[in-house]
Image 1 (cartoon, protein in one colour):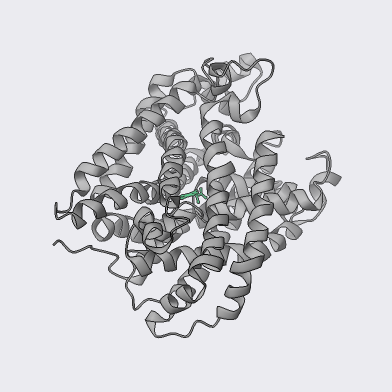
Image 2 (tube, rainbow, N blue to C red):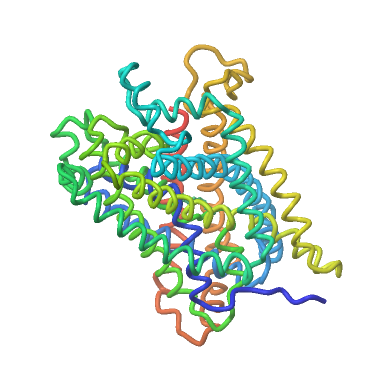
Length: 487
Ligand code: TRP
């Protein structure tokens, strides 16, 4: 039987796992939520939740994966009677996230191209839009994004290019594709981010961005937001952000854990992934938010519009070097998105490849990756064609809903996001902690952690959390997510 090949080095694993965690959520979610929810106070709540909940679920997933040496579906199947269906929920979540993630990844590629165009004064740059924007009384960023949304064919092409890149890397396998790309891509991303931070923080007026992010109450006192959210809302926002950002609750970390060698230290890796993800989220804030306050003070502070309107305005207004920073910035976002999407596709592919291998059919990675990518491509086309709900076949329209549509029904991107991030992932993480705490028993995680020969120092803490505290936090987060999406 063919051997199941995993990560060659711990560094490769770590970069891949951090790559999975660091994504669009870090760049447009974290800084904005931190600013709007009380700066440092939010950061501290985020970190506490990351310890009580993120660390526990992360360690649990890594241990489940490495113990069983299987993808999410088989892993749950082997371990549990009651929860054996949960791997399938993970695969479904992976598809749903990929549908919109690839569409957005495609948008990012488009913006790299756009800024290359600006650099050379070529027709595919945004320069030509300045006159249109002046005439319409809008901004260049708004014109560019509007024109792009108005041309779904172009969006579909870029989306499919993104799917193809993801597919090619996953076909390369763990060691040959994912590990290689992430070992180079993640350090490169870090350097690019540093350069962008230096530029952003030395702009005139950047200091307001820093105040927005870090000083508690600044956003309200200066009229950036109307009123401070209450404590429960902050808690739920921080929790939702934390666990989406760490890629938890849908089997991504189970899958990557299953490829990790027994001699590596799970506990240390879990901590490092969390620390690095948070660090990059903060760094992304230091780049994006000061830029917005310095050069586009009326711009949006989060979500797709921050990335595709506000930031493009920032680069368009930066003068001669603007396009260079634009290329650098959008390229780093593409890196962040690709390293996340490959882990999502791997969740799907790993299961089918394992099954084929166990049945003695050999490693059918290429075939299964092609099939999975084709399905993802279809979902991505739907999201791109919908162009953020501007074409009249939004989920709400198809469901016959009338009046003003709630966000989740107003466009396909938010619909898939609602199903995955809003419901399935928090539910997955909740059930996983219950499974480890009450069915399988936390000793399983201890045994697996100690395979490397290191004592599991956090076992006492882990045991209490996984049985009581983590499920409670997850119920709160699930409630917060549902409330945010539906009420
Ligand atoms: N963590 C990613 C981000 O911050 C998004 C994400 C959520 C993800 N779940 C995932 C990525 C699972 C890969 C696998 O943008």
